[in-house]
Image 1 (spheres, rainbow, N blue to C red):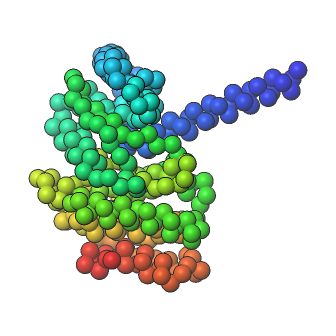
Image 2 (image 1 turned 45 degrees about the vertical axis):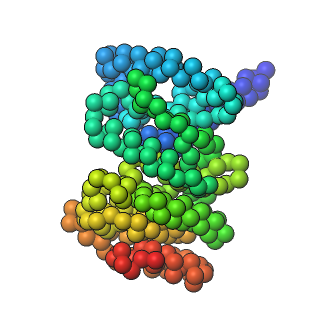
Image 3 (image 1 turned 90 degrees about the vertical axis):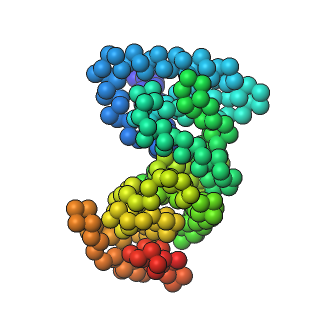
Length: 307
């Protein structure tokens, strides 16, 4: 009898862990990992809890006209994400909404529409797809539902990747970026947590276009937007941002996949000065020359020296 009880407890713990991992994945998937602060606000602010609750009711009521099986899978500072099935086609989708507290924030609205515009403009197997955009009392858009994990989560489990995996992932991300740049779009925040690996066939997809810059829009070309370890020198220093900034970030991703470390560990964010990159050969002597050359070309400090 005691053995049966222990087994039941183990099974319950296992499913709880699965649920926690799933929630963490979804937050990375949709760029909502910044939601902790909002969660604390909801706990401590009755008025905000009521606003959130009312928003969920309105959202569910509105979406139920077109969708079944609506479930909240992630929530954060920018909004709520739900999974659902289209009534007409039965297709499973993800729906991203913007938080009601941000509806009066021009910057948040700008980024939301920027993200919609950027993804809708592209159709590529390595870029998350968007199907529909709506403004029916609140802002939301419908995109493909991804089942898998981010490259960041994958590397946390596996550590350094083998050469074949690095080449496979790097090639897919490079093709996606080439498509972005040919459509006048710079992502500006390429990093492992914004690269999603589908469970079905390990296809990589770029996600979270929340800080994207349209090359032909009025969005400023300067500004240190991005993640410090993956942001290019010109981003850190507030210089002009181009497609070469994404190439730099891809190079850092390749370096991290191959060695488990960052090329520049001595970036001074106060003085905005980069030190010298560590020779990846010292960390991984067995890397092919071709891959080493590509990584070094990508992470060159000057955009003019990048491939």
